Length: 445
Image 1 (cartoon, rainbow, N blue to C red):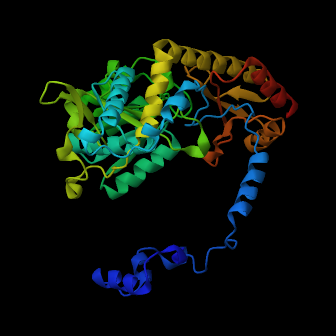
Image 2: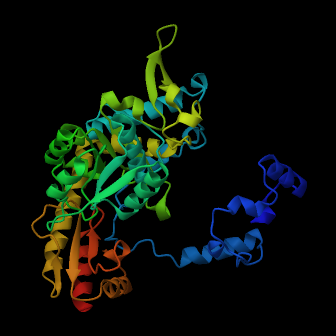
Image 3: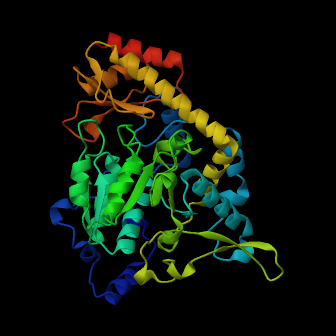
């Protein structure tokens, strides 16, 4: 990539000299030499624009976008009303930048304020922020919140938390001088209560996924009591669509509510951009990272919007900032706002009900296939469930794909020794698609 660095060689040398280095390689001295690439990248020579277009056109022609999907694991295929992309792609939203000047950014600030209001209504919390990159980042930022609120450097999280979120937590913890401790699952797939109680002492709090990675539903209120008895914070990591059915975290004793906002009107899109949402009880508002828009009045008494709590913003006190997030995720926040407004409580509940009912239908049908069984048959689940099989999960995945379906996720993704398959169903899956999947599983045996 050196050929793309715009600085001249004398300019590079001047910058290196300024920081006390003599050559560029010294910038990478902390990376072991055996991990560094000792040759140029194996890339083709540059191509013309028309050649690149031909390549991508060929890729597009080979992509089948209409395949029924039975895979979730953190990114979900829900119906997106046509008004959502139509309004969110309005040029005033699509090109807007960070609203540092309120007199020039009233529309954007109001949009952020409306988003915060909707997230608070959804979660039952008192305050919300905007501009957190994704659910994993929201989890890591909530860990830092708990550290600063409780002045403790130990955070607990359920082993049922999404594996990628767990890795993000551990990365943040390593560089924040914190100890991130996993609490194992009991045989029912839910957090082991005894193990949790043992670890809670001197911890800042506990991150509880509801539902968890395996689709199972935890008892938030019960766990909140256990955490609060040890003066910790309960942080609920949520699938927002599940709140169409489940009790809100704010009504179940949670102190902070976080999660991945992708199900709220954002397509799968090869992994992004997505949206992390965060909300909390009023007393913890000053510890929220990211951006907070507030409503006030101007000198003439007219309603106005401003960025609030600026004293704790990372662009003001960078050396003391608890968070280094400063980019604007407003487009994704607006998309979520429009989706929630269009769906309303009734629409959100309908999406949650259909997802749950269809998932239970498919789980029952798969259980009837010889050699396949539910791993947690007696534990309530939302729209995902784990199936164990006598056959190799990856081979099943390939056979199902050959039948024109995107099947469940082989859990060897999360654990190399796990032969389970995580299936997901949403309102987008029809009965005929589910029956086709069952037929494929029966034939593949």
